[in-house]
Amino acid sequence: MGDAEFIRVEVAYATPESQSILSLEVPPGTTAEEAVRLSGIEEEYPEIDLGGSRIGIFGKLVKHGQALQPGDRVEVYRPLTADPKVVRRELAALGKTMGRNKARDESDPAG
Image (spheres, rainbow, N blue to C red):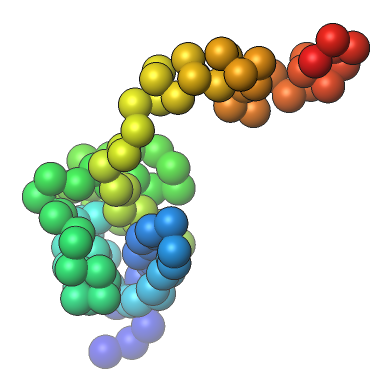
């Protein structure tokens, strides 16, 4: 089999303590979910529940059946551990932001 019969993709997963990006070659037409399974990342991180996990390609959510293109990086997302609305409220109470309005915060002489 020649190289033209496969495409190179990556599968990524991260925890607060570590991250893994695994590179692999798959046949054209391989789906995002198939690539995750073929990568073996579920063995490295047994907490991954692929059936209940969202996945994306370069930060954009995709369906598990999305066919991959050469160079795609499939990312397996963990469930949120904190509600972003609650975190924003708590930060606002402390006079801080989540970083979106950094330029405004830095230019504000009161902040």
